[in-house]
Image (cartoon, rainbow, N blue to C red):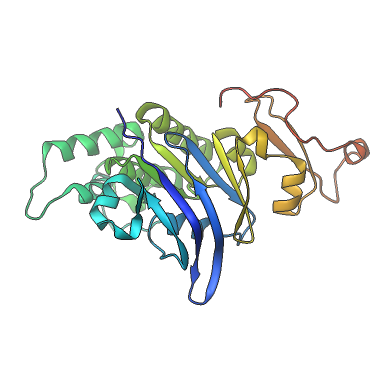
Length: 286
C-alpha cells in the first residue's frame, strides 16, 4: 500500500532575485488525490511548483513534507518521496529510452552499489505502465512529442515516489496526446495511490481530471476546492479576465467553460445569465 505523505506550503513566498512571484501562499496537497494548479500566464504557478520541489528557496515561509521543513531534509530522502517532472525537460543527446528511465533509480542508489533486481523491476514496470516498453532501445530524440512525454513520466514512475509534481505535462502536445498523458496520470493515481499535483493551462481539462483545484492570480491563491465548487463564471472573470458561461460537461459532468469573446457569440448566449456552477452534479472523471 502506498504511504500517504503530506506536502504543504505555509506562508510561502518565493521568486527570482529581488522579484517576488509567489506571495504568502498557504496550501496543502490532498494526499492520494490529483490536484491541479490553474491561473493566467505569469500568475506564479510554475514558481510555486518549483518551490514545493525545493528547486527554488523560499523568500518567506516554508515548505513542509511530512511535518518537517523540506530544507532540513537530505536531498536523496526528498527524491525518494517527491518526484518532479519539469516543463520541457531535455534528455542527453542519443540516450536510449531505457537508460533515461533508469536514471529515475538514482535516489535509490547507494555509493558503490550495483544495479539490482529491484532497479530492473522498477524500470521494466514503468516502461510497461506508460506504454513505451517497445521503445526501450530507441533514442529519446527520435521519438514524437507524445512518446517523449510518456518516457519522462516513466522515469518519474521508476523513481517510485509517492508524490509526483508535474509542470505543464501536456504543453506542446496535440489533444489526443494530452488526453493520453492525463489518463496515464489518473491510472497512476488510482492504481498506486500516488499524490499528483500539476500545472495545467487548459481549465476544462483541469476541471475534468482534478480532484482538487488551486486557482492563482498575481502570485496569490484565490480559490481552492473541488472543481464543481471552484469553477464559476465569477472565478473565470477574476482569474483569467474572461467572460464565460459554465455548464456541466456532457461527458464527465464536471464544469465546462464556454468563453464569450467579441465575435461568434449568439446574442442569446450573451444575454443569458452566467452559470455559477454545473447544471448537474458531477460524476466520476471520464
